[in-house]
Image 1: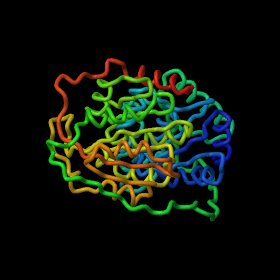
Image 2: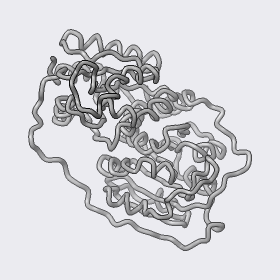
Image 3: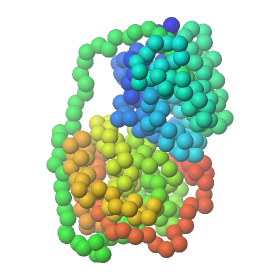
Image 4: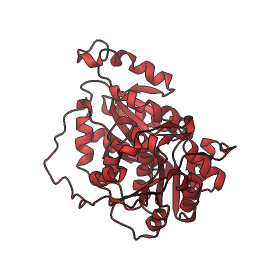
Length: 387
């Protein structure tokens, strides 16, 4: 058994100062230690997949050898499969995973872990994530971290430490101020009542976004599907990244980048289907989102990339959700001028949200990006001066 400080401080010496995850009783000492150190950063994510995407965003903007750790119970691997297989693996965005081994064969545990425990190693192997058991001796901590870093630096992909029961001694969480909350804002609806055929197209909306996001100071992360493809077709700029999977993860991904790089303005281009898939991210952005983060949701009421099947978005006030979750401003409209007002307004002390209702449809012959995911990631990192 080791002390939480022994691992965290060894990790800090190697550049690990960002943590995100979902609690597990095995992880309690780590979380308690990190929460009480102001020089470390911990984000409590709504689910494990969001935590993976957030730390991927940190890796995207990393400077000075900074690194991130995602912590989760092994049951949460199911929530994290999508970003682990189509974001971190595809774009070569490294992170250290600490995965607890509930239901480990031979160790008595609760019935919900009876299947996940035995299959945890196979899940990691199947996702091509090298792993070893979490160190339980002080002398083993440094070598384990060094092996993880060597793999991360060589491949640009995650490495996992699987934590067995009793690996870390308890660490008390002292009572304290949970931090000031933002004053609640009221969602604003500015609908002009345009018929669907009269609404702006995605192309129109993306042109406005491009006009307001100069490459020297702004990063634009586009959600998977036609959103990223159409942005690429209009203008393939070095400050843009096009997600090709991990549906719903663009907002925690953008949050990680915005937190790691307060010098940049980060814009997350979202879609209604993607936003509905991971609505817990609204709460995470509302609490942790900084003022350099802008969330733009282009809502056409359909899964346009997969044949136009309807979503339930017409029944949802996304701005109402954003306002209730703590965004600094939240507006929804069918008037594309709302984007001009968004980008021309003064900075706020938290993230801003706009939902623009657009019409369905995509230009014929829409191309797929010819630049590969690793190349578009590397180009963006060079552009923003990341490691």
